[in-house]
Length: 405
Image (cartoon, rainbow, N blue to C red; front, side, top):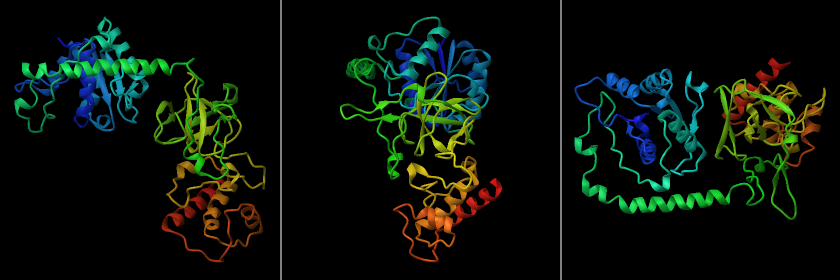
């Protein structure tokens, strides 16, 4: 009888093999439909295996979230109170499973001290009624490859049967290498624990590309590295405004930075007025990181889209005091959803800054005076030619501007 059942998408077979091997190395018997009898119904076997297992790991990914089979298996496991959810890429579990805790394994490469993997082992220990075998003391057992999804041609038996005895003998060098890797990982983990040195903030990326932008929530000193601003800086309550229903919190000011947390629709968190496209935020559980500004909506103290709440008739200072409200509006298509946090005046400036980049000489004295304050503006012509992207953004900004008045 298997201790652990694993549900996944065939698109993630290689990644799931790593998880299955690690679960096996922790001392649990694993079943992941590698031994499906040809004379039995797929659904009957899966239901039976989930029912007999003590825990069921569901591996969510972009592919598995769309799979009816994975959803059905997750539902069976949830109803039997043995569901252990994991995510191997930047995806939230689909409804209704997004209401249940899950372990993020997107950046896990077998490290025994990884936060997400520790969550998985803790759940298995509770559900299976015994502790996992310490990683350094176990030798991972080979996990067979998988047959194709029902309805697809089945591979020849030799492609997925358990390896023979000679192949098992060849695992010894790999086991020794695994022990060495674990030892190095544990040493690195200790070195990076609090108390071994000052906590440093990751270097800014996107925000630094905007002239005059200061990385938010960082304080520099001549004698030491940049340090995190104290928690007292987080004084404004906010929620997300994201059509996906959730927004990632990242470790640095970049969409490529590590995901350290997620905020769900309607969940409150704290932030403060900052410059740049990335704002520092803090959740109720203490998770702190950066969130893209356009997804933040303040519920106290004004709209998050403005770098400062302008008084009536006052021109917005723009990102980092550059006078530019949306720096990349000439390079990408804007969406109506991201414009909801801007005032009518900011939308007007955002629309006309597209023309200002082209060197248009404005007839409106207010626009001419505003853009002339900034060194990037070079008035050269009375007529400009816009790209299709710029034309589409001008039309969208005008529509949003009219709607907000």
